[in-house]
Length: 166
View (cartoon, rainbow, N blue to C red):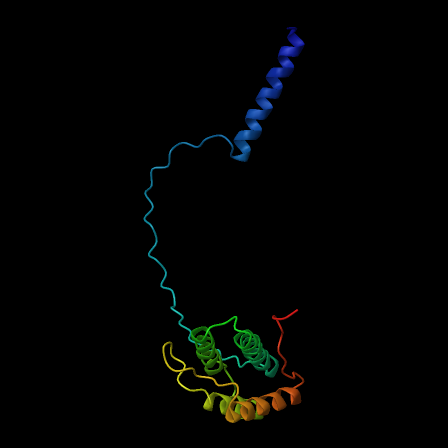
């Protein structure tokens, strides 16, 4: 290597060392003072409690009644055609009774009153109890017709989806 190149390399190395020292990049000698950790800062504890109650819309309530109607319609057809046995039919009517009892309504509306009237004609819907819903009874028909009228008033007339037949 030529002397001029060696000088250049030496100058560049010296410049890098000086710049590093000035910028704090070179390691510092060990610091001997011991620093104690600070006491933890107390924090405030925040506790919140909220109850959110969301009432179903009339359309949601009526959709549940459509499910009830659909189940009853299709199973009644199958029972009448002999494709469903008496125990299956009774079990379905117990299930429909439980579904009706679980429909959540907001008290004070005509639709809620109609659904409560429908719940009133549902018998004991526990498994093993006599069938809870008799869709051929006058009480069920009247209560369901009332619920249908209130659903229609809310823009959600009841119907049944047919799954049986051809």
